[in-house]
Length: 324
Image (tube, rainbow, N blue to C red; front, side, top):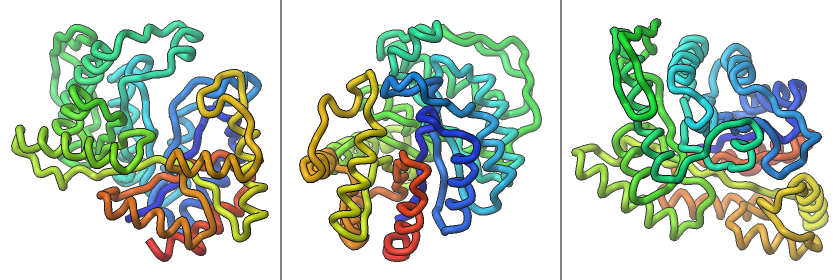
């Protein structure tokens, strides 16, 4: 198993905070660095800054030499596939092939309404995602492309340069819909992230994905399974409780997306464990990670919310990373 860091770029992520975590991910031995793609806070904290997607990823490409990186994930409801295709190739070249293009169907209704983007029903969103993936891969050929879909159209379009690898830039698809999204994962993805999920739910969806791979003659082992999950780590129970309380404040906003009420420290830690967060002292988190590895997860992205608390990242690097 490999460990990466995931940052919610819309939750008051400044350049100072972002560049600090970029440097830590590179220097401390993490596999990868990921960030969300939202235009404003998903917990409804309207005073929080949102760091622009493409400049932040460009900074990673130019500032690092080792880690993989990408977004988790860009919704095709407000990111056009031509934009995604061109930026992906640029980051691919800048980083020497370390960039992963993360895409999804879109989900946050309040964000779409606020900025004037339509959020169609789920079936239509997944169809839009399928067309976007077709457009992206066709454009990466570097040849003239004409395409007529329901949502996207190309007329003798040419996009160059090509990706570094003949197979194109690696694509991560986010989502776990068993009827439609997992078919797209089988057909298009090099990496899959099912979103927030428990082990039993992951195993069930993984079996569905394997069946779709068999239908099209693809080796399911060629798809990297990833998990994004929150964590609270501490050297002692007091440190764990203190960190949990700071986290609860961070997740407080106008939208009850995560939690609908406030908890006492131990109650909050119990609730996080119930939701399959990684919670505890370093040794406990190692065991929790090993259980996910046994379930088939290849990469865990640790959702790091308080970027001013660099001690938690350093603690994971020192006492968790060497053991997984």
